[in-house]
Length: 316
Ligand SMILES: Nc1ncnc2c1ncn2[C@@H]1O[C@H](COP(=O)(O)OP(=O)(O)OP(=O)(O)O)[C@@H](O)[C@H]1O
Ligand SMILES: [Mg+2]
Image (tube, rainbow, N blue to C red; front, side, top):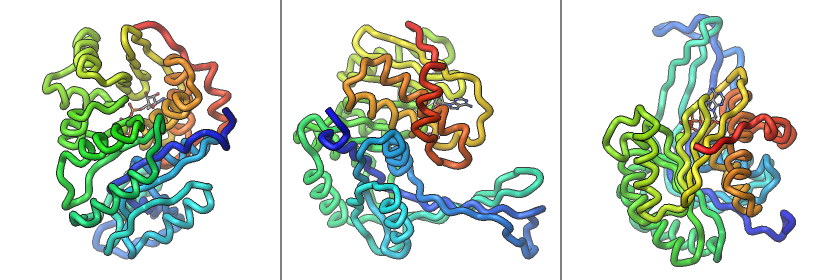
């Protein structure tokens, strides 16, 4: 199937953010600090996943909530990247996260604004949009934190809706949103070790402890479970198959969004009907390509292709 015929992957971001990174020399509180370099990146986990899906050459739709006061920067970015925009606009502004990078110390001071507040009619609107986008066999990625005014079981509600439409859901969240979300049995999920440990309510130090936690999730009906382990790689499980994927050693510039890149690569592989091994290989290569970029930028398709054969996959 070529890229035109394939259904787009849809990512849902309920709580997007504009990440504004400013560089100052010898940052001081209570003083005037002059900015000598800055960049603004649209962010939020689902949007980060979409960036990488697009960089891998797939079509992608984005939806969720944006605020009328600062949505235009996002729209301009989506237009330039060829990302199809289906966001629901609310009054107010999406979160702005200011990161002040002090040079030469490289210390980062963060200032995070509150985000949007949703009302029940906003949620109804989003559910209609999502229903309109969903088709049999299509992949949806639900990821990230929740805005104010949204109940903790929102992912559960969306998964129920999407499964009725025959769509497949990849859930990547944390805390209560993840705990409630998995009750609707998504097709796939990718906690990191902390998120998994919090979910099962016990420390996961030994391999046998991680394995037992993964088996519990599989037994609940979730078909594919990935546990990401930062620089150590990721475990992937489906039925009786368990693999560990180890990335090549790289000099990391920014690990923020590495997990999102892994989700993007894995789901892109699924839409190509790759084997489980090849999906985690693509996910790991996309994650590695992302950690060697500054911020949450995606690696290029060429970088991903170069890294692919360097990913080691072994039974686990
Ligand atoms: N320092 C690193 N060096 C090489 N690869 C890395 C590094 N950190 C992360 N990765 C790759 O990215 C994958 C996902 O990383 P991680 O486990 O940190 O996800 P995460 O905690 O969900 O991240 P986030 O939610 O911030 O995107 C890892 O499995 C690995 O392949
Ligand atoms: Mg993550």
